[in-house]
Image (cartoon, rainbow, N blue to C red; front, side, top):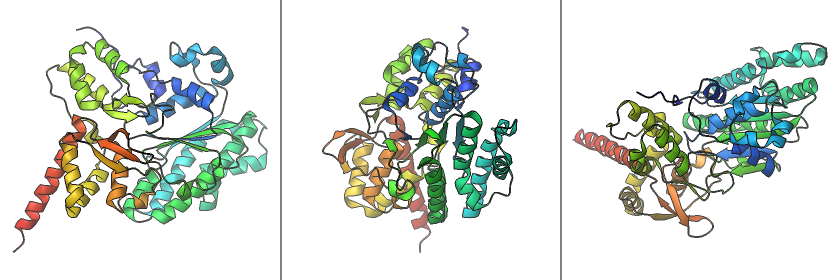
Length: 422
């Protein structure tokens, strides 16, 4: 059997992929676009498993002081020598993921957030060496790495860390916040949403608004949360969602990238199957495949070319959004139920889409649920009717299977419930 480059199944660390010789679909064009388009605070929203975390890891590796520049050899960005000379390895970087802030109470969520900030601060302990920081600065740093951080220290923690890093390195600081909306989603599910909004708003405003130590920031998440809820007053804020044309090829795989991967692994004859099952998402002006699906499919079929396709995406989440929608459609009956049946049958429905919802509004009405399904990746658009109204469809066979499975599960549950009634 021929030796192939390993596939990075479940690996979201750019350095590990490049250093250990895994297959990498080059998304370093994101760096060039980010610097050319320039926004002081940039938010990217994409469905889960579309490469957000890997791209954030790639950004950290590119900009961070002391980076191994050979990681980018042969990649797109390396051709832009002037940009690489100006930016590669030139900045202190704060990089955190809020994916782990998943708790059943506000107190536990706050403790998890403290831990995340504390662990990131520890990564920069070099600033305690030498005499670039005075005793007061060093005391401030120590307040970030001890387990006794109060809430007032927590909400200023990232701003404090940027100021200390700027003083030590004499360079502005890049801030990367991955999965920024997970704490809000979990808070909404567990009944402490208002408290969490206030904490996250204060944390973000301090580090992202009128912070003289900030070079720029990038945030990623699954949903675009209304600016009024946690980004109040951020005039330096740029949002890029699945509807925007900028960066439309930087998250997810485009058709040529999928064909190249299939060809490399000797799976050219699988192209139509992969397209039917995992393509169909529309980001800006580009049709996009889910990377998680394509990588898992290629990996499985290297070992057994005769395997049938699978619903890989459904195993990465509880599909709570979809469950809420199906339950609401079933309760609403009428038009909502008819629209759901049309979608499962491959037809198109027209709906207004709101991108500026807050998490406590997502399930408040059927209108909001349509927007939530769209932003979460269960639906895609087939063109605009007008400014806010879109022609929506199920993107591919995998998602159609997931929806059908959820409908059948709810039907079975209702039948069992009705059977117990006298």
